[in-house]
Amino acid sequence: MAKWEIRHWDGTSEKSVGEMPGNLSESEILQVLQRLACMSLKPQEILSASLRRGSRQRSAVLDRAGFGLPVQVDSGDGFYSANLVE
Image 1 (cartoon, rainbow, N blue to C red):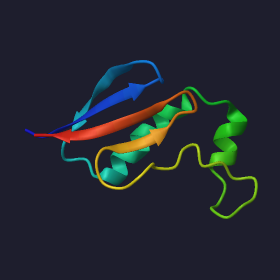
Image 2: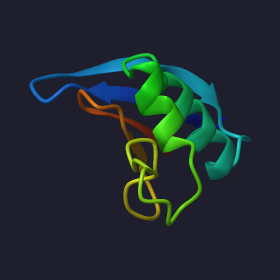
Image 3: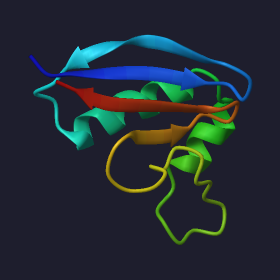
């Protein structure tokens, strides 16, 4: 059965965070990664990342990095990634 493997890279090491069911969409997994990334952000960083695209005060810290797999999100101190494994 397929599953999403979620990992965190802090710049020096990579560690497993956990797994999610493989029936979740990329959009749903992106939301999970964004929630995990928020744990290492300050409240103001989360607020500025939540502004509409095009706003001068907006931060891209919680935006998806790249296209396709793995799904990746910057966490300020590294990044979270999810890869679909059969």
